[in-house]
Image 1 (cartoon, rainbow, N blue to C red):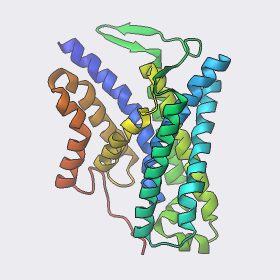
Image 2 (image 1 turned 45 degrees about the horizontal axis):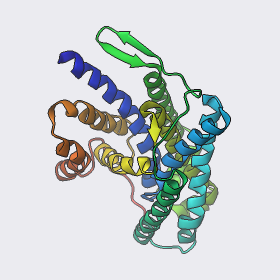
Image 3 (image 1 turned 60 degrees about the vertical axis):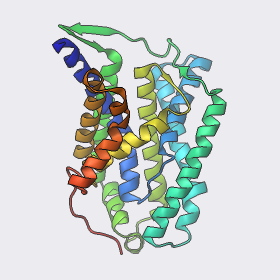
Length: 300
């Protein structure tokens, strides 16, 4: 039983790395651009599907299908922005009205994209062709580790670290934080806000697509609802982490990932399914700002 618990802990940590990568882009969009983009899940799904079909059609190696997934996720994010969010930005709405309107439009965009993905896949799960990546397993005592798990973990942690550095220490990140504080002030100091919006959305869409590709390789398949199934988990992780904390995202993802994998050994199925809801409920009741939340300037 001890060996099984250890293996499930390892699996939970790998899963947490992927959850972090998915939640990271959503957290940046939500925290900086003030958009809870429910269509973010479809960047995950379409990026993974594009990679799978490219691998099936052309037999491309992993680096090529990775590039296809990244571009697909980023471009789709720009398309959704052009149709759903850009018209709202042009109306000079208040922060509260913009947040509510963008939430509704993103829900509509998400519904349409899920339907398109279901039609694209005939509502069936599709698998990455074997030629794209060969899975190898290594045994370390009682634990089994695959090369897929190593790649997922390293890629997720590396991209998370890069995102943290960009947001906190680069000129782009300083402009992004200025935009989060006040759009009007950002324009006054010469920040090209529309360019910044688009670049951020492209990057976040690319992160979601990367998570989709990695999880597809890890789990073996993807379907039209794969991204949507992760959305609630991502929101739970962000709520648990608190506003603006990338370290908090890692901790929240680990808690949820271990809860799902180790929980299968001790918890009934109904509790496992409700775990994201329980996390959101407990955190909002006990600490509304999240585990790592902090006070921030608020736009007026």
